[in-house]
Image (cartoon, rainbow, N blue to C red; front, side, top):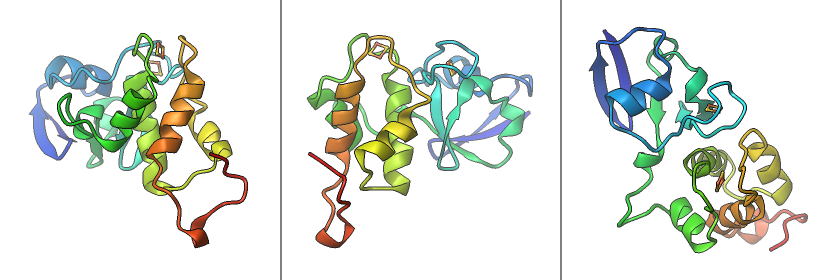
Amino acid sequence: MIHLTVNGTDHALDIDPATPLLYALRDHLGLNGAKFGCGMGQCGACTVIVDNQPTFSCLTPVAALGQRAVRTIESLGTTDKPGRLQQAFIDHQAAQCGYCIAGMIMRAQSLLESNPHPTDAEILQHMEPNLCRCGTHMRILAAIRAASPAPTTSQAKPERKS
Ligand code: FES
Ligand code: FES
């Protein structure tokens, strides 16, 4: 039996320990936000947060998680009540086909939790592992920038441009 903590809820799943986390989320827990893109750690469509770190769920066997908590896009908000970052992606029309967006948002969420006022360079560096085949990267950048709370004067970084 595999025990997983996902979005604050404990689950016991009778699955192969080698099952990728992505499959457990989608096929066993009904959490379909994270997407299967490449299955090889090359696109980021499957990104979730594991103990505050953005993680490719396609490459993570459930047995490797141990006690670490998993968060998915479903933890951030709902269609009726999107979270701050989700709303920013909507406002900036960052989705074209939308396939990459859940992974993009979860990677960005991890950034803003550890660095609430990232510079554009920091955002670009952090988001580099996630790809958007539709090419909406500039809108994604704008959305993340907009979701970053305005820094106080003492927190302001000189290279940040709005
Ligand atoms: S599906 Fe996981 S990185 Fe592409
Ligand atoms: S919006 Fe289509 S892959 Fe990013």
